[in-house]
Image (tube, rainbow, N blue to C red; front, side, top):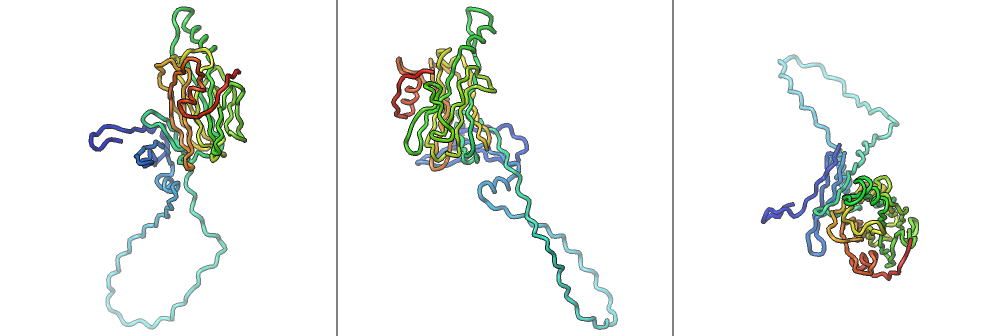
Length: 321
């Protein structure tokens, strides 16, 4: 998207991983609270424009068959003697059949592509993706970006830091009735999936492997009970900041395309990072990439720091695993 006056690029969304899609919804330009906004969507359709239109409630008529061109009129025959009068025509009724009318074949199923959030395209609507039911798994995995100097081999230094590192995936939540809380391993506040807060932390992982990592699950069948959810990560032990780590966040709805993004390189002594903010506004469930590193003040916990930054307004007490 370019500024009409200056030609400067003001928004960009790169859609990748397309395979059999023949139509795409790349983005949505809309107006909210007096300002124009752009939302990246990246939804593909293997059924072409017909599937796209049907998904937005537009009825597509069946294409009419093209009539064959009329045959040229025969040449006028030479005049002959008048023919004898013919018998009156007999009307033959159409045959009776018990066959049911044939219904048109249903459109091909919609195939969604992966959505990658970036600084230029930081948000996506799960509602428009059709991803607002079932369980949504949130995964955080990480790798060591650097290796320390001064002792042992490079491999031993990387393995030692990886083994001692403990990152905690957490979620602040606010329900539609105003209740607030936190889901985290600290204090065994693992939450619940089928009762408030409808968010559950699977466990406490220390490997950061792509196959496992830190995981929590959000029950989107109760999305109307959720007002906002802030997913964040805190360093519990093993590192003094995120500077030496490379982390990737993936949100995988049960019925929809995965949403993923990577964290930018950390250049501040941060021990807590806001990952993603999920908001429910008028039934529109939106995922916003935050990737925001915060530096706690001396004596202030990472949880209290994230609370202050996003105005959650909770009272915090020390906790242990």
